[in-house]
Image (tube, rainbow, N blue to C red; front, side, top):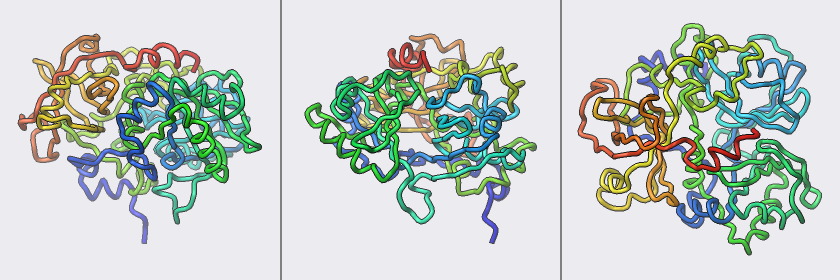
Length: 447
């Protein structure tokens, strides 16, 4: 029996929107990790005020790309600068369609002259592998799905532990007997823990300093326990699945934009290549913003803030479209600070709503109507309210601008997208993205 493809599902549903629209869909949180260890509020406070340990080992999909054409296939289908890509460096990989819309991003680490590791949700990996196979590139692939999708279960190939917060450097010195070698942001250095090889990637979240430690799974338990013991005097807090999903709202990263692959005739073969039971067919859409046209959910890498990583010094799929888009009045990424009293009224029915996490596309309006759409919203306890990463029309992107978020779940096809469904309105104020000043000004500058 043939495995159903993404195109099969679109044909059966009647449209991409009818396939993907699911009002009230539960927000994604990392699998195989406790929802909370100390409580989400304490866990958020840890990377702002102390030191936090986050386990990324289970929800990342890894694909190793190796061979004489490894750089070529990645450069032909990604907008990044491959002329300046050192071994040991990582980049936010930005593949786009011929029309200049993002497929999705991923973390691309260069492990050797002709070897890379692409990590994240698997949409970018699918894109690269398909084009490599179709184009006859001399390159091979080894994949390790996330733990929720690994055939037959089993352990991942790699562990990934993040150490974050103002006390991160002190914890690292306790574990390794001194400071690690000076390392640029998003570059890695090889280290050893009692003879166990580890790669330390200089990282950060919500503006705080830190490292991501990566190594063979066989050493995972030892490394994890070592960090826990060394961190006890510093008040180390483990971060659970709820809090883990929230720092992107402060640091300005919009996770899982809709892959722009559902409609164009030139991608029909690609949709027939993709299995239905993958990220492209199963990541739901919901919220108060509804359109029957899936293309209204497509985004440009410029809107996501990736303009600085786009490099026009080489030819790549989508290059011509991005050259044009650079001069177009695209939406601007901002952070909305939601009024806490309105959040209590709209989400908590008058009480503290507790933990709020939503990837819903909610309408953002002013007196004249629609001006933007939210991409991710989350409670940030150190801020005292909900923040929302939002794409908004440029004329409304000035910090301090007041707008309204329509908080609700449009039922989908059969109801007018502009219908007044009586959803509560939440007042909000526009602020920059990233919201955190350190994340906005310092830790990205040498990326």
